Length: 388
Image (cartoon, rainbow, N blue to C red; front, side, top):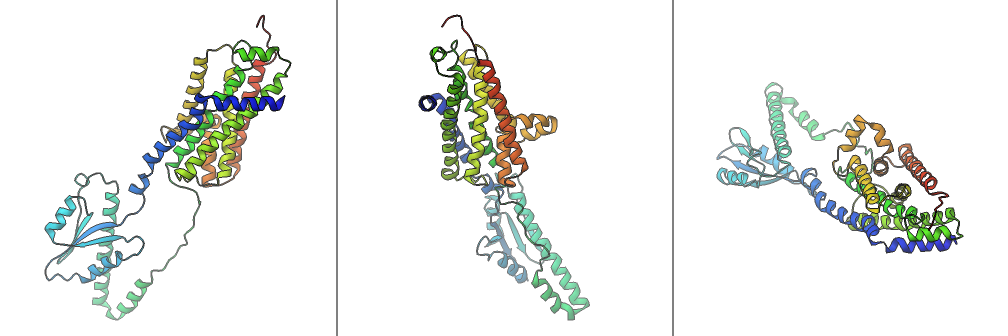
């Protein structure tokens, strides 16, 4: 009988197109929109790009040393620091006005740098950073030139040792990676997206309670007069619903990881395991809502949608800083918000790996799911009806 109920419920879930849309298709559509919205943010504003500059040399100007320095900075095989254009002043000004270069080095009696204002440069979010780099190059050159000039006048014999010392570029530190995870700030939206999909399994969970109450569905009436043990039936339906909904979440994760190439910063099995626990919580929540009294279907759906989206809003799905605001004013809310617990589990796996924080989040999710299931069972147990 358990196997019969198990297989029957799987068929029912897979035939519910509205439930499959919210758990399977809607997260995929939203994830695709996130991909196109966020994929070029870091590429345009955070990742380093070669800086285009123009060099204007006045007639008979002694600027060969500075020109050699700039040529050296533009000879890197991977990502050179500078992209040099040697031209006259009028052409350089036109390039600067058209936002094709970030600055103009004028080499005359003195070396000067001319940069465009942020207003006339167009929508370029990295302009201030690139201009700061150019200013640092010029400042460093002037400083070194002044040092060499002063030493040449006071102690010419020490110039050779100074040049050797500056060519060594000693390193006094060691580069260490604190984490191998994805440090892109936009990844939190994908964490919350999967959390939302897990919460949307509540729609399927509510049907378990509805289909086992005679006053809410015709199928519930037939089950109440059948000799099948209600606890056995509900248990079979719960696990079959969990399996079917988890399959939808797994398809979503595979789509995000392998099709959209989203880097979650951890292995897929850990992502699936965390999502599995999240599905348990979502189905338990839906089961509890479905067991509450004689509520109209539209009202029940409204409660689940509003509750799920409100939890996702507080976790940062719509506003990235919302979770931190809640942490400042009401940290307890983050400890019981299932969307925060799921997304924070992904975040912890991404940055720290499996730690006590991760296991604590999963334990909290299991407790919340268990409480919802117990409360739902208490509400629908041993109900009697005057007539069916």
